[in-house]
Image (tube, rainbow, N blue to C red; front, side):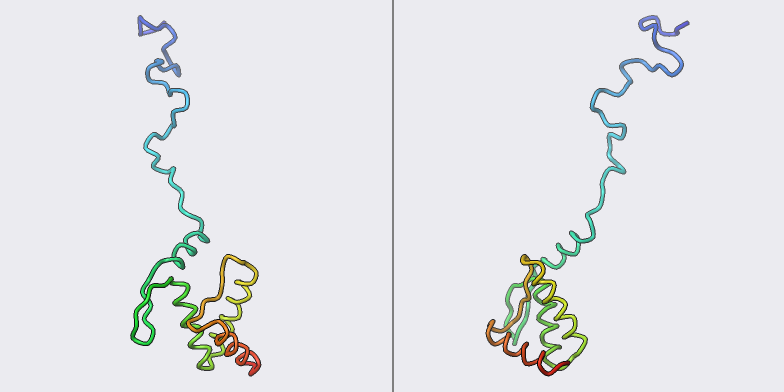
Amino acid sequence: MSTNAKDPDVGYRRPPKSSQWKKGQSGNPRKIRGNTSKPIWQIVEDVLAMDITITEGGEKRPGTLFEAITLQLWMKASASSKRALTVLRKYEAFAKAKPSYRVVTAMDGAEAAKQFEQLLKEGF
């Protein structure tokens, strides 16, 4: 027996057609749990690509956070820091393995390569 005179198929576990989900309609219309966070590699890449202002010798210029980190490592490696040189070498190996990334220095390419080779020969 049905309590609804219009639709005899309404009853226990048979809701009226008007309140059933439409085709293609989500069960969670507000998508409260539907948002997923970015993968960690994408978050790190976004942070390292952030534009910042780099101050060198009292002059300000635009650059990326990755460039500023690499510049600091280069300065510390030039000042005989073994740890900074080790990290810089790892960055260089990573940059060679991934052509989209490159080691950024504050000097001209030839001068930077010359000093870097000298540091490598000294064997920190």
